[in-house]
Image 1: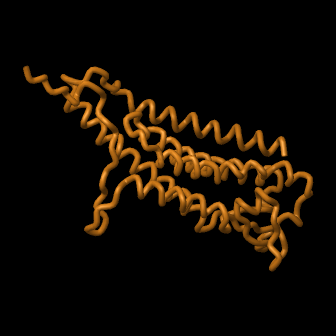
Image 2 (image 1 turned 180 degrees about the vertical axis):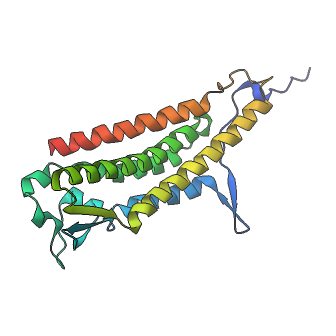
Image 3 (image 1 turned 90 degrees about the vertical axis):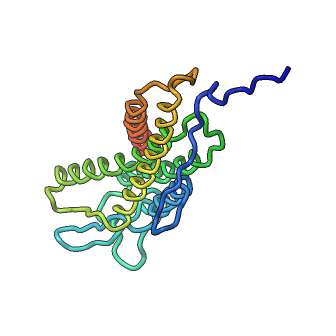
Length: 225
């Protein structure tokens, strides 16, 4: 007797990639996320902050400068205004803002789509942006408390580009999650292992958790090296 076909709905729907229409061209969401991660990682090496002392522009620094303690040879260095020992203990943790987009890129390279990589990708991008924004406010408030506004750091284009790239990656990840949830809803009567409806809560918790992890790693590295 002919065998009964095995229903594909016996397992949970696969979390597949989505196609996004940009200027009449369909581009895979995973590709957009990879590009966003590369752009964010590249911003790490470009000038991100301008530093002024008593209203005089001292120069511009990138997160790579702060991490590896490189100096601008064309103008007075930011480090000339501070004790070198203090700076050595305060900036090495900036490397986390390079590791964060790299981890997001690696998540987008995952081949097994059935495990729901969308949440992890959103958390990686979202936490990178949140950590950078909040850390900037922490640093500026600390500088104001210590120097009374005498020394100031202002964000440059690369700072905003880093955040925009992370937001784009997170938004595309959210679109992937939404498409996955539509499949689950359509198969809710037949799928044996249906993902719980708190996927958005999980995504938010992942993002907050990874933001906290970036902070911990930042201060741990800064205090150690």
